[in-house]
Length: 118
Length: 134
Image (tube, rainbow over all chains, first blue to last red; front, side, top):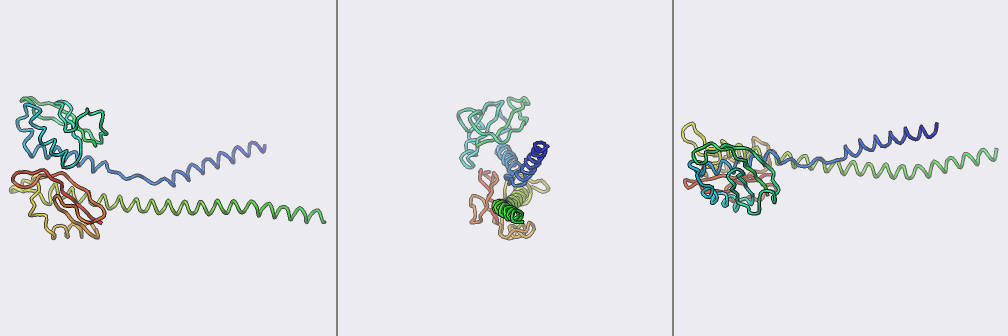
């Protein structure tokens, strides 16, 4: 009987401890909306600079991608037309945001994955 | 009679010795709760300030200080002339901030700064728009 009571007490203690630990946890900062905005900014800047008006070769977009990289330190990847401002491949970087966008490439609509990372 | 009082004394000593660690644990728990509460409050205030700066920056790059052509607005294309101190002051008052500065390529002295990527001028030069506040 005493063992049974001890088990119940232990379970109750563990349950209370769990509640205490969860309530003591300090939530982390949430930067997701801001990161999404930065990713949209990069896309808008590329658009405003006329990079998507007549995109027929991927190298024409690279100077502006490099410029964005120099100004912000961000890595941008256009997966689909294989263009980036960071060497070493997409898998080497910590990507925070990826979105799918449609561009006109070689006079054809083409969906690319636009990713941003550090 | 003697045995009974001896037993009573033992119970009191037992209680006393068990009470000390209980009190120590209780004090430690209170301190931990207080510390965590402070951290949570600081964290919440920092997040609140960050969210306000994000809102100010988003309004500025989408509408507040963008190039306009009639009714058309060009998000992320900033007209420098619109970034006046009156503009910053209006937003500072609206978002209930103690201080706020908005400028291109020049982060202020405020403790928290965020940036947005923009272009400005006729040449559409790529730059950072800094929004700093406290």
